[in-house]
Length: 407
Image (cartoon, rainbow, N blue to C red; front, side, top):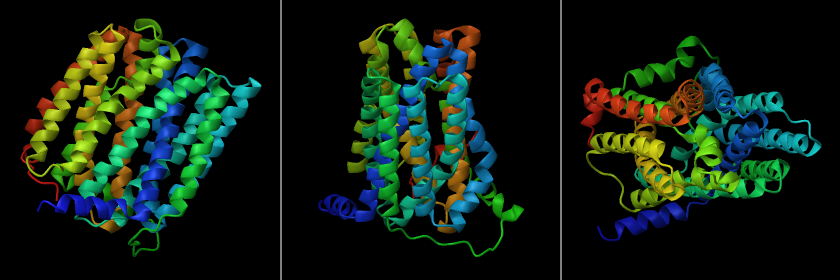
């Protein structure tokens, strides 16, 4: 019907809790992206080492793996809204410690790694709780469109955050960290005001069966397992984020502001694509589209590896981001729509671990391979690896390739 799209959009955008949720996600995404720029530039200033840039990713990944089973159970037993709000409050306090340390001059590589480890542990609880919140804010009918709108808002923050963080770094790391701390505290308040449905578990203790239920459920759903693992290995191999400080300083010669622009470029493509998906949701052949998007992601990674032009690199990263968000929206919808509410916390925790593996462990992999082979060969190998993964997953998960609709 001609009016159905506008009616659905109006329903979503008049949903107070959904809007509060989106504003909170924007605030936390701004904060996280600004933090990534500040930490990356400060760590490289202190060490001049690609290896330590990778260690920053690893140190955030470890607590996520160690806590995955616990945080999923917590997200299903307790109020996800309060868990998310408390985590953001703690994250804000942690970043303000970095601000104080940078202002006083006692911050070094060891203190940065300790604080990032603690923030990684807190984020392990925050991410699955926040993911599992959204299905309780909108109807299942509106969820794919709401997910695309949420992705649009988040990617807009990803565009602004790195550039803003790079600009603020001109005034010193303490300025960036102080701003980030305020954003986390604001997000904590916004989430606290959200009203969401949640079905609580009917068990009284965390037994092994309950703790492993998320993994068991995902293994029983090949399309979910395939989509999550495809994204994991594609981004694990093809991620370039950790090495952007080196590209900005030594290959493209653009400084911290240029680093912020490079980090923002994928989000420009992502937000344009997510707005398109919000207005025209994917309805058919979603599995085939997902594999095509991953292939484009790999090709774009190869192009970025070989580029020595700042403008060309930005264009390539825009294309990379547009391809990536297609995969993100499809994976998110498949996981949330095909998971019962009482399981969403545990399934989201496993999904978050996979995402964390691809992002944080991917940063470590990038730093390690760059140390072994050099920066450009590392990114080039990653892009080729992504294409190999996509081809392999087509054979391993033919059901995912043949998935037609998201519901």
